[in-house]
Length: 483
Image (cartoon, rainbow, N blue to C red):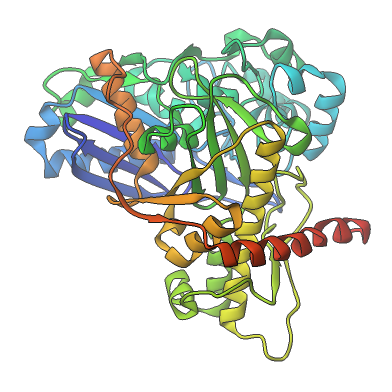
């Protein structure tokens, strides 16, 4: 038996798999985000652990015999979160999350002072990453910075509570901007740029390797017959790739979660910093990946639903199918954008609203706008030499077939939809736990059964290509006007 623990922004999810990767049970526990100031986004690290305890307690109560047989646990989690611990391993302040925008000034300064962030780190210095967050703390909360003994990512704080070990994996750690991504090791020059050393960092393991074992008191609490190994695990997107079998070079997925991701595996480190492509280590050895990331995917639909007093499923259900792009255009930049603009200040908006615009037109525009932003990601990956012909759909938004039809036609790729629902990151985490427990990757990361494959519609591909070209003129026009 194997467990996958996914520390998401809105909830912790735990799944229990047998040796054949059949889902035995699952549980979740909700989380909240605090926004004490404009552009700030924080969470209490202890809330992650409390939620993990609740989810694991639920599994233990529901499946005691199966829990006794657990041999491996894998972890996944939202990336980039700056979790600052004192010498006693207790958090010194709330974690600064991936979608926090306070460190824009620090990003500019770090890129100017240390060009190796772009070469060794392989990514633009963006407010979402961990390094500029620490520089912000260094400048604005010097007492906290001086007391910081360890900096962990969210899932690695959970690991600490599970095992007592300070450890991290390559895929998640690449998102700190302190990693030499090609060498898969911490970089002293990049750490020094933010006043840190290796001593502040956890030791590194591959995602499929063991990082420690579960503490005895937790084994007793959850009924484990022996202490399960805890795998290195992965950042949420690398773990999702493990869950859908996107391991071999050229395989990938599209994620429609809070944020949106176009992910493609690579056999080498392949950065494209000019277009804000993310180039990270994968969660399995000797493998890397690229991502185009947009900050507001289902977030955009959720915002519209809340504004209109409806549910997202009601909006997409009322829309039905589409025969072409919406007459209304939508920029999905509710909290800024990453790929390709790296612009924390840009904001969302509609263009083309008229007296006849109805809720269905706005819904259509939001689905199109997110798809257009993903097309920008596809184009940015192409500049870096990456091509992909089919992707697997994951995330809550993948339940909308019409949205996937738009994406398949616009990106001109086949979109595969898994049969067993939306648990990509937690499934990938469990698979990494299985690899760590068995010591083998063979057969662990197969593609799961698919429910549906959506082919591009040539008519829609042509129409959406023209619409995307018009849509792309909006961003530079807004920037030129000072927005």
